[in-house]
Image (cartoon, rainbow, N blue to C red; front, side):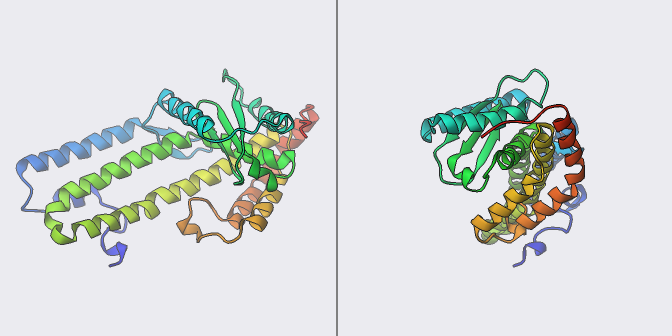
Length: 293
């Protein structure tokens, strides 16, 4: 059965949930549905926020909660993953990361930066001021500017509260599926498990993954501007993704991936390159020329 036959084109509206007549519902269950609906609406109204690019967000967690989660996750990684102790590598990464974080302003505490011995070409930044870089990343981020593009991107996730947003989306989707389960479970009978699996798949590809691609694209643009403000050449972000494409092999179809395709990323970066180059030239004129090697 196609998923489109299970879900209305624009999701389950209030009228659909509230006006459908099901004999299995008692008066108490109808009251519960009302309470759930109005409770969710109140929560949505109080949890709205705007990202650095002006995109509307749903943020249910407070900053202290998210920061604590980030610190705990980072501490666990330090206990389970080998940390690279090479002084030259650590100095190099600290130089690039420090140049970028120096542009954040405010009263932020210094960011903790660790290099992990891991062959995968990856890096991450976590709420609470934590940055991790895998040694495998140096195979594709081959100079300071390209490394800055990656670190800027990861810090962009933190600045845009993407961890909070992602967690909030998970909470809402899981709550939504639980509500559907409660409302329709008795009526679905033997097909209940199959239908719920279908709804879960629909939630994954129809809600969560597109948001994740949006977050990735947003972090690309924030990171592009961050690296330029710090004095790194933003044009190297394009070369970084060319390196990624050359070394990464095939990609899944973009609609089944949490990350935009390489061509999409490079096209979006190029579209924002004009502003980034102005920031880069201004940084150079003000003497911000990071000497990281």
